[in-house]
Amino acid sequence: MKINEMIYSLRKENNLSQEELADKLNVSRQTVSKWELGESSPDFNKIVPLCDVFGITTEELLRGKKVECDSASNECDNKPDIIKALLICSAIFLYFLALVSVILCEEFFRFNDGVVVSLFLILCGFATSIIIFTCMTRPGKKEKKVKIKNPILKGIIGIVSLIFTCIYLLVSFFTMAWHITWIIWIIYSLIIRIIQLVFYLKEVNDEE
Image (cartoon, rainbow, N blue to C red; front, side):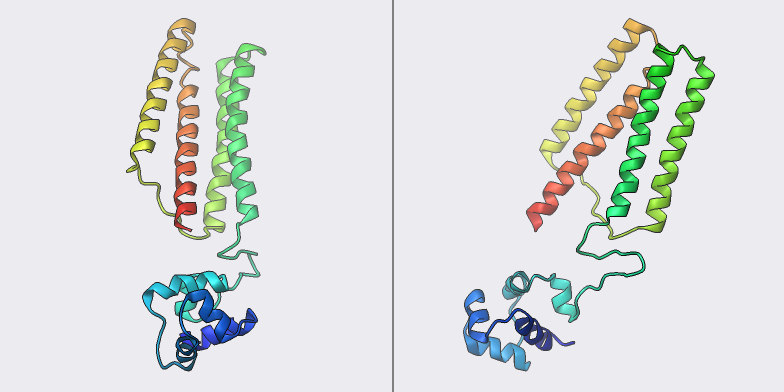
């Protein structure tokens, strides 16, 4: 479908007259008419407002077709993948469960180190398998990598790193439990990832 046909079709779907669409875009009715007849194309600065009016992406408008949902995997580009989110949340929960189990088994149940390490590795193995399976079977859209160029993000990561280093050294020297305090760095990695995701989501919201 050509862009002029797309504009006409979307205008009809949204029950808008040429005058109403023109008012929303601050152009004349004749301009909208020329777009629909293919006599001219929307200026670059009108592409995004057009998409906002019709509730579509710029890619959909320029390609001349709406994004279709994949019925087999029940995925759609503009809808969240609930199953993927649940699988990843389950994996994260297993990581936390692995950490808690190590602490409980070591401090309260007095299991030997071999049992504690085995239980920890089994739970982490399950969590990692879930993440790998999810990424391979439900890749979804490509996400932007979080670039650590934001000075605020850099500062927060630096402060968190310093705090966790101090915590690790203090806890390790006071308890002399060097065989278990390394878990602090796993917690550190999870917290850093959460901070990066928060900044990534904020950037996405700002772009939208």
